[in-house]
Image 1 (cartoon, rainbow, N blue to C red):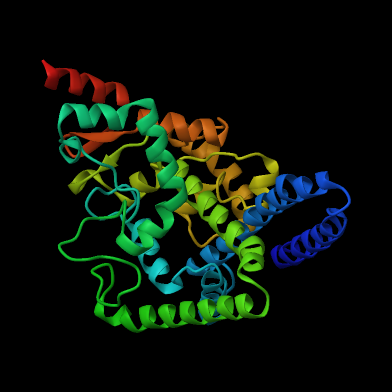
Image 2 (cartoon, rainbow, N blue to C red):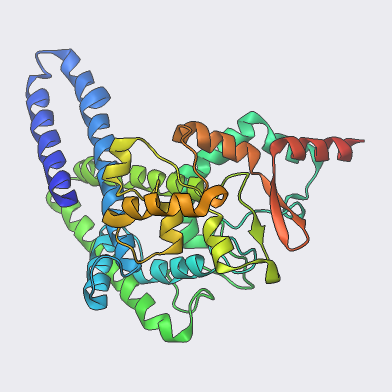
Length: 346
């Protein structure tokens, strides 16, 4: 289905753009129609479908796509490479995330800041925690957060040496996993060569319009979904003996993005708690499994149906850093940060 959508959207925008371009010399308004309606509509729709393809590769990484590990990894490698993701490197670090969700010392993504991490002059802290500063930071996370994570392990664990998802010697990986990292890198080179050939035989503008912009917006969806799955003031983080697998898995939240986005993106948003408890359940059974889990989990099931953009802004404000209470870390908000800034100024 996803590949039919990709092809249909590409064909539709090609025909619409060609027809409008042919008439734009006579009707000036058609030029504006092309660039203010037709192409933005395509980018919005295609990026959402790209995200669905990304999630199919995610299923492969969890061995939930088929019963064959070989098929799963082959399909995952092709799909993720097409979206410029180092499949095996991501698969390995993502597996570690699932094994250690919300563990302050072992989780691999969206590891929160502590109060000590934010130690800086009061004026700089005030600027960062202002509404404008928050907006700039949130926008940066949603636009460049994904490549920053792959290239620099941003939001991941801090290691003593350079860490990324491309070097086989990166501390994320074990020595036995290094050949898989090389394979992922080689697949990315093939994908880059295909993009270069497309540029040669069409144009850079065509590749940017048909592939580049949807790719970038797909990354926006990816970061937004992941951020909202793991960021909520109700969700604690742990260290030491306070952490267990079940506690970590339940420290996530289900959020609906609306029926259309939920379906196109294979319900990755609204069945996430089930996914963390049972990561090999295929996405097409996740809704059914979630319905069965909700009454069993009771108060331990977290769900929020706030619009995703409002939720992103709210959680950025409410979940600024964590503060340790024994071996449990609880979220503190920008209001707490401002009280800390005021104490510094006193």
